[in-house]
Length: 361
Image 1: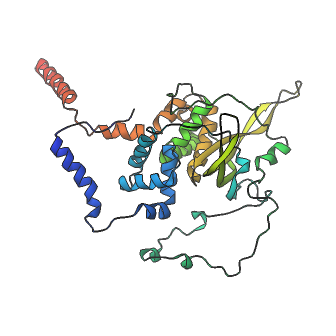
Image 2 (image 1 turned 120 degrees about the vertical axis):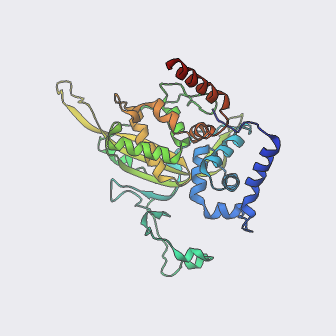
Image 3 (image 1 turned 60 degrees about the horizontal axis):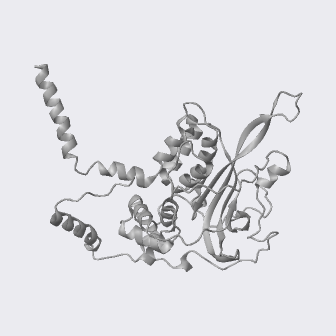
């Protein structure tokens, strides 16, 4: 459920809303939505992921309206999303067709197509840049000197997957393709035990900090407790198609995605019936989010694997514990509602305490 403010004194509420909306002008400045869209890409990426709504313009508007409050911006986007008609479902997308802008592997140094660093803060110094106090231009950071045309062995929209390395060596077996329609938690509430499609959808919509924290907790010993290796981290533009009534497919645009394949060691019984020893193999934890949202996608891949391999008394392998508590609108709404009037319930508690005190006398 989502909690919203209760009605109270009409005039007082109107004044409160007026103060909230006008306080951005008290310093004599306002920020344009286009500026938010251009300069706060990572914030927009998080809001789009948690709201499961891919629209940079509306996300920028929500961020401005919420004064940068992530949870409020996500709430606004989900509320708006619920008012829109669902006209089409996309056809199944294949991330091998992603136009890759960034692609790194922490498991292999040399990969087909090479490591593509792309745009990332991973290689920057964590020092405040005083130059940003002034107005910057593109020329301050980009130079064309010494640039050379790079020839790639593969097209950037047809790069092989790093996971193919493991499959070629017999260390990974692809699961059978499951054409069952995925469960949609935006139309039907999660039922526990959850299906994998429910888990993946809930994880990609989960609050970024919560997903990251629980993924970290899993690795530290509160779940399956294994150290994953990131086989491949991809960031790029994924083509999306829809299908008309006649079965004709149409390309409708690209969306930016982050995809993670995490390698996690596992044991399986030997294929030799006379050999009772187990064989080491790899399984995959999977993460996929809107925008460039790499840390969350990695944590998502860890939790995906953890929830698929439950361990007794391990909280990060309990799907109800994880999925119910990572939802930002659900958790923020419940915590926020505690500041709203609870006069009746609190007075009833006081009455019981007073009566108890009188009886003890």
